[in-house]
Length: 257
Image (cartoon, rainbow, N blue to C red; front, side, top):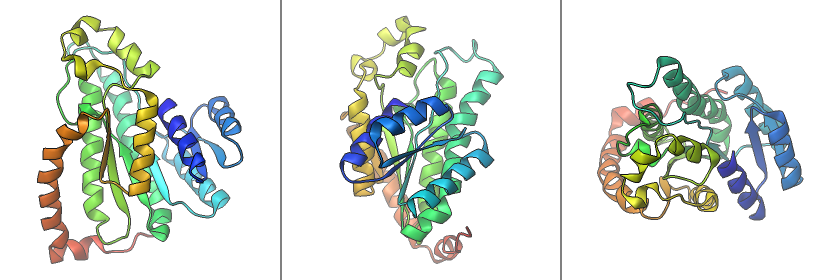
């Protein structure tokens, strides 16, 4: 929750009101108390569709409207090869990192339509390039990337913008624990890939994405270069698809609350 907490603090400093969602009541309530009256805590497990629907609806009632949603929940098991992994671990990663993003976005969509809002789905460098020993995590982040880009096309005529955040190794306990199990493998990776980036840079990237309604944000800075060619090719494709009359008619259908 550290990246989300940092982003929430920065958003409040800019005058925003923030709904905080976490499955651990003590954690999210303490954070809301720390951030002050412009933060409100809601308890929900993103893998549970009913819980996240209730949390999003409660947030809308409390604040009156929703202008943006950040689908940031994510987990990573200790790094291991595919041969060393099992289906239960793989499923858990997909449940949180993929279904959790879907549930969050799906619950917020009707309210964001009312406000011409913004959606930011948090992916990873692992959603762009192959990284050994984290295949389940990489699969989930590729899925988030594809989900967000497809959603962007569907929202072409809705007034909603959809962005993706691509993060490298962020200095959080989750990343540290995962890498510690295969330190020898990560030691063999190029140093700029494995060097941790501060939580603050990731939090600021989220804030920048919301403020600019960006198609993509990244941290650390070198990831922007890796994204350039991807943005260029996908951008051309998206323009072609968005302008096709049949596609525009399909995605222009209203979203029911």
